[in-house]
Length: 231
Length: 292
Image (cartoon, rainbow over the protein chains, first blue to last red):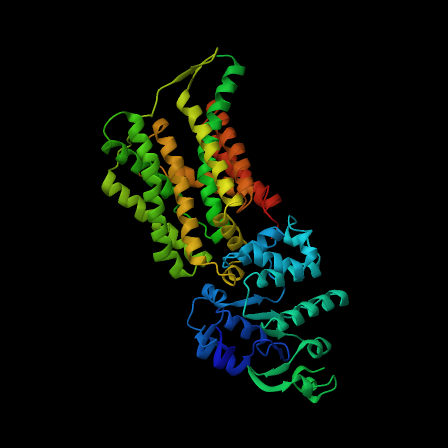
């Protein structure tokens, strides 16, 4: 279980996260929603050790992550699909996946499993990542993170700018990962995507989680969407 | 001598310069490409390689080849260790800030030069070539060692290319070059990568110097020209592009050799510097660099 407890932090002197708490359970999708600038991406980056945490604790299965250097966080089992994908553009698909596999002892078996989820990448192994279509790039970004065999997967707006068929494919992968026991933290702005994947939705406001609502308690016209997201 | 053979001799001399320059500049390019650090101390690492080559060769008894071979192994290792220490003690603490690291490497340049002056003295000193072989062409004779320098540089450059494109360490370096933040998110210890790259870049400069000293001399101020020419080559080739660096080294090295022989070395440097200015105006990304 990923537990974020009373975390404050930000960039330089600017405090973006303020006493933020939430948790992500294995086999569940926890969606983080909120208006632009409330700190959703900063929260994911804080979990990854890329943003300075000044107060509070981040723990995965009771192991403290916030005191670790950034490069050791993924080794604890945290996979990250950043906003905008941030692939290693000049590297090939195979090389991007190899970077993801570096922390794993059983590399080939992991790679085979990941490529079963994204068979289209199998055909593009020697192609440079920057020449893939937007949807294929997002698939590669997720596949690269899955190569870490994560216990927790952080997805930052994975459906942004994608066509419906690609969104459906990503949703299918997320549902499959959830069934395999991975805890998924999904930052998402689109209500229909959230309602289709989430088990719980954490609404962020002013740098902290203001309200957490189970999926069953939400519909497309729920007041929380209007209040916290503005849709 | 007739014009044809004279030109051939100039081209061969130019190729020797290009070979040494390519090795030196690839080290500089690697450091800039991966770390985004403009390493002004790169010429000092070159000088240190030459000075250490002389020192090591002096302490190894027996044939000259043995001393030179020992220098080829030991000098780059010592220079690499100094570079890695400088990275960890200075550059890392500056968080690899582009402006701050320029100032820091200028400081490092002076520290290394003054240290070399203190321990090595102000005199230029020769290192004996590992072998003496003269290739007699119909028009002139040419040093067999110079030919060896060209072949050795080609072999080392191919090894660097293989390392960067075919090994896991090379892949890690290329990934870090693209995006260090994302590299960290996949377990890559960027600080270690940077220390390794800085050491590798310095070692390449030192290897180039060890190759050069038998046909030149070691001196505590000898790093200036290689630094200037390396910057010229790296800018013309495209910042961070190894292929561009090698091509530009060939262009600059050969033209430097030819112009130096037919006219003067000063004119060669003026033309090379003018070429950089033209590239910066008309193709700022260099011949093979990616457009920003």
